[in-house]
Length: 346
Image 1: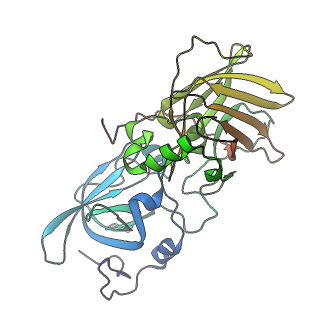
Image 2 (image 1 turned 45 degrees about the vertical axis):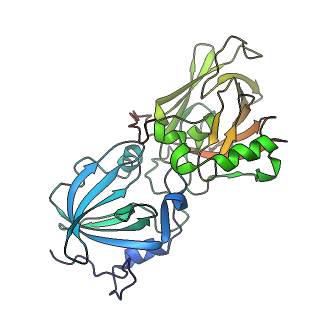
């Protein structure tokens, strides 16, 4: 097969020749990660280059994957599996099921998996017909997705939203100093590789619905209530705008029970009645007990962005409130189906 771009690095450290500038920029850029913590699964200091033939392209949520047949240094045939973003995220980059055809020659640049010697996180590909697809942006200022921002700013929290930037697009206050002894214990026991609820197709928490890049969230009125529908994990939250407290007979759940009120133009949503779970599964994780009360204050700023200021209070795990913010942009992209396929089955 023609060498579509000369190699600039080798996984084993042998001397390599220069490559395309676009991929040099990709490798120099900070890793953006998927919905899990990047460094837990992949080593950014171990780039890989795979030259071979596409075997299969698994186009699904929460992660797509590309399998490539190649040869190792001894000339033996090996199969590489490179994890990619979710189907929804890739679709917003213009990827379809036909974008990676079985049998086509391909060169993939990526980052080595920490546990699988034939695993990688997809970075960029060059195809025999000259197409180049970069799965990551080349700087830290743009998202890796086509967000299709809406031009109008009606100034209301209702509408369809998408996380404005990734990474970035909000803030999160430090929380480690707020652990109770029980909070510190469960935090230490959490292993993102095996314990993340996302791997089991769980939405994890209301916060994760705002946190997931490349997927839309719609806020709309239904009767006297508001509905928050998230593309991620096909999640649906009903905010009871008439209640002032949570009914005692509501069974605990992953997304809890939500009541809402207006404070001027700010929508305040208080959610309780949770099952013990993971507020934010990324990285070291933020775990919570059934005593969690999660409050969101939703407002639209002068730029037309939706500010989601959140506070998590849990007397079992934290000595004080954990706070943060997500910034969402209005989009014309609809809320599509997610149809998650579990990656871990208990």
